[in-house]
Length: 296
Ligand code: AMP
Image: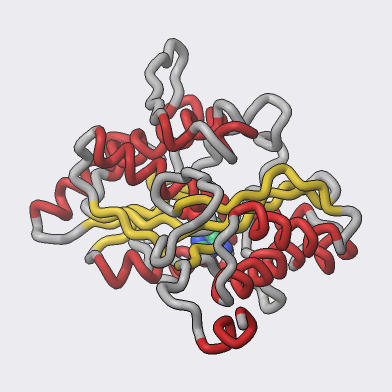
């Protein structure tokens, strides 16, 4: 495995591989790789001949009050993880090469970025869409793999790829979790031992809502109340947002329809650490026998 820092060298490598009939996959990351990232590399390997993992902590997706400077970085560890999962290249460009003095072009995806993460972190998705477009142009992949962990981000990327005609297949891989349900994240490292023990409450809140939906709950307000009640069992949790929304449009009707796919979205603070999680649940088409009996 080779580490490439130079953008034009990366483009040459990808073009050359494709000239030789190889399919190229890109796995964009901000590094500090964990098993969630590793699962994306595995998925890329299954779908391509040459896998490029990008490591770039992207300043344009962090607000000035956020953790860009302190974001965890460990290139040696990342190299070991990427290599052991069969990546062929790490692409780790310098910030000054990605955003040289005089830089002034940004990608702005509109409707799908308005709510939830986009509302709480106003410049975040502009930074994400811009850097992903740039990483696509540097690695020239035919396939790119993203994690469902960042649910709204997957919608933004898919929209950008459609709207701007990137000839790239986007694969979304499932969220990898710790044994207690906490979604893996590079930021979990910030959690104190005490907060770490409480952090699985996000997953439990989602699971409680999922069970209610699978048992016939259709009301958005009721679904949100279930998540809220579970989260409140940990008084230290500060809720940034809770939502149940249509999984494709992110619309929030009062009542969901049978057969509709909905996404449960949570963002919470534990101490100073911001955690996000989500799950996609399909509203059952018919009430099962248990609901029927309870309904009587
Ligand atoms: P990040 O390094 O946090 O920007 O994430 C890079 C990619 O890894 C994104 O596509 C994330 O959605 C994905 N990812 C992060 N955590 C997980 C996880 N626990 N399971 C699956 N994918 C993840």
